Length: 106
Image (cartoon, rainbow, N blue to C red; front, top):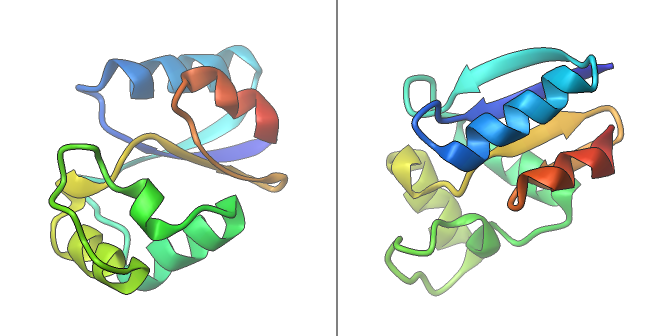
């Protein structure tokens, strides 16, 4: 199974999710989103597939925003506000917090 993880190697939850993907034998594409940020459109697609509002995809320490559009604008402008990790497979997308949520898309 192919999987893509939007990953921050300094984040323990992101490292744990990646390890679970690798243990499951997934063919993982790693996107270090701080170095290669997703576009606003890509973020919108990912959250729609995850059935999550973009506001729910913001880190807890990110500034409050009034709308999903504002959340997408903020994440596109400053990828450090994106909660991680996001994991996508053919079965769907999850915000893998806790990391065990990756099993939902394996």
